[in-house]
Amino acid sequence: MPPNMALFIWAYNSIMKTTVELPDDLLRDTRKYASERGKTFREVLTQALDLLIYDSDRNPIRPGWESLFGAFAGDMDNQRIQEFIDSEFSRIDREEWK
Image (cartoon, rainbow, N blue to C red; front, top):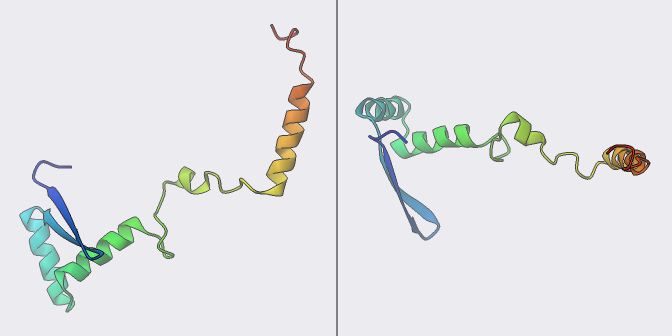
């Protein structure tokens, strides 16, 4: 986190109260953006973080490789492939490979 930014969070009845220190220009531009669109600062900040953190189904956005990690764990084709690999490796004579 850059040295001029800090984040403090308090929980109160399932609503998080947060104090965020932002660079002056970002705070000013965010307030202007909200005002021009008839929104509150809170609505703009919430929408911006929502777009950054979640996909359209509100699932956390993961790096590309992580989105596939474990995705095929229960796939029958993967199970057949693993059984074939296990079968082939079981034929290896460990003494020959020393």
